[in-house]
Amino acid sequence: MATITLPYSTTTATTQVRALIGEASAGFWTDTEIATWLLEGSIDVATKSLCIEHSNTVDLVDSQLEYTDFESAPTSNGIAQVLKVYACIYDDEATPSTYKGLKKMQTRHLGRRGQDTQGVPYFYYHFAGKIGVWPLPSTAIGTTGQLLVNCSIIYFADDTEAIASLPEFYQQFAIQYAAAMARFKERKNAEGMALYTKYIQSMNIHRADIYERPVDTNAMMQEPHRTVEAR
Image 1 (cartoon, rainbow, N blue to C red):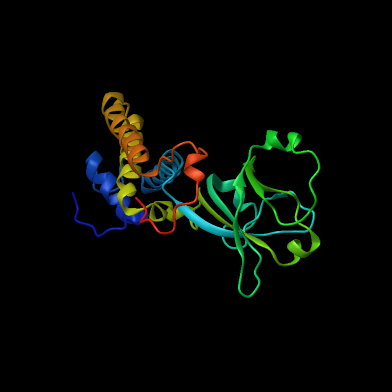
Image 2 (cartoon, rainbow, N blue to C red; image 1 turned 90 degrees about the vertical axis):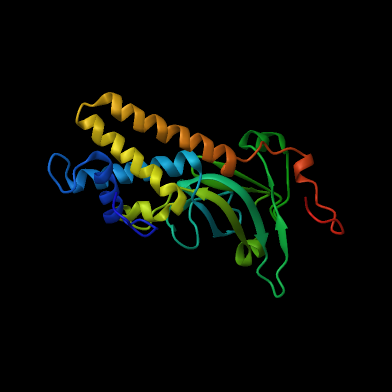
């Protein structure tokens, strides 16, 4: 296999795929279809492993419940690309700023909240490609406040270089995916399934060991004691 420096680009990843399938240059498999499989593999890796972690901000708006856009890339409908929200932090953008962590809620809880006065949000939820806050922001909050959002996301600045957006130690799995698809095209289904099974097993291990978050519980949400070192 060729010696290539990480991180991989689509070109160098294509070279690695070709080394696995035994075709050094375009013939039965074109570079274009291998690049397509690398894109599909990168999407699948990001979705299964939650490995692309992202921080961004959302500008709050007076009386607006739900939000679809981030302040920086991906901007328009960027929240639709979020797979899982880990934290939303309210920032009043004053000098000095005051920060407040919002509690996670489910959308069904809105029907049981009764009447709340507009002001600083206390809850957030993630539903249908949107982030919602409750209570609704007041005029003052909607003028200056924003949310800091930590999440896992499926976002590539350039689809032709999607593999470059993956952490280096996840790029090999997109290569395995592309090699499996190449074998399926060749109708070598047993070899394709061997590569694909190895790929799936790697995703399961990495997600469980590195990125899988346990279910939130009240005990997990307790504030750490400030005089005791975190364990």
